[in-house]
Image (tube, rainbow, N blue to C red; front, side, top):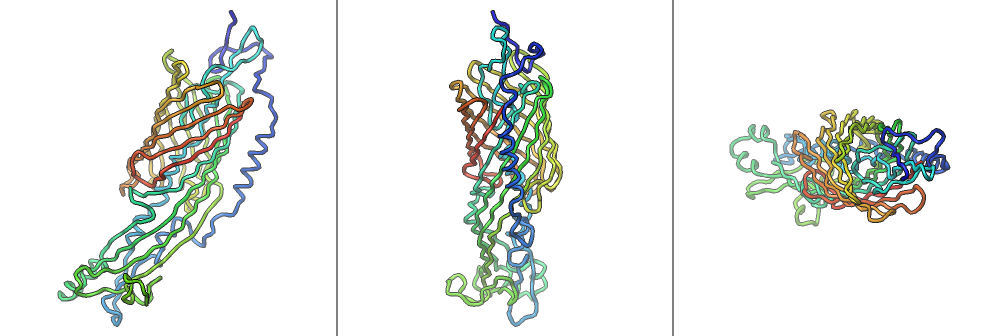
Length: 437
């Protein structure tokens, strides 16, 4: 009977034996490097201000109101819209986590067949698309990959991005308290209703490479390249709830409508409008990762991994995290015939500006044929953000991987929300290319 030795065990092939995956042409890494250079040097933000400040700075950054245009007294306050979007970098940081760095597991493992005197591909699936399995690449094995994720966000905390509404008093409470009692009764109940119709899209590219230092230790590097597109239109209007005395916007209020045929704004100085259409693109963060396959119990493999995120992206333009992130992971996986379950549990230690998160992924991939793998996962992201955004983000995912030729693997994945916390897309699309040397 032929004796078989697997990469990832303590066995070694005879001296001089070479895997069939070694020595391939370097053309693919050159193509990936060229793509990275092209994307990274593309035009950056189109703004004169940081992308994260665009929505908070609508209407000039504040709303100025008065009880009479003839009066010199103006009440100035931050809009409720600005308060909601002030933490947009942290919200988007959590949303970017829904497009995890491509798995460094690798699609293939190769066994040494002493009868054939060469490496033979093991009968296993092509691996998960989102999660990690505990087994490692094997000493000297290298993978390079490219992935693209597209998110067209649809909701924020369950509310449709195309129909967001915010309400606040037309006059700050401290201003009302200084008014005579009659004026307090007349103007204290007026409201400012702000409506926002917006589009928010994220294109996220990853260029990745992983290398087996030993049979049980992998290292990998990924570079993110992002493009953010934001556009929208906001209208703030003053509503006299009891019809007993109307508050007006100041004559110098940014976006104020002095005359309008719109019934909602037919009265002068009760509406203000503003809009934005901005993009930012460029290099995102760098992800350095190491994985150690430390145990094989016979019924499951176990590994630990650590990811260090270096904030090379411009956090103020929403292209990356603002501060370094450290994420330790515990990984478990096994194989039952053609099915390979896996579980990943980790915690992303981030600064308060980016929001720390407990993260988990559980699922399985199944080898339908030697060239086709199907997968399904559930993903969770939970944080202690003080304002209540993104507390519990839960997703489902399905994926497909095919091996059309040699060591090329193509993949596609789709994520769907299982709840509506945070900034969410109805579908998150991902495509992947991987090559093993």
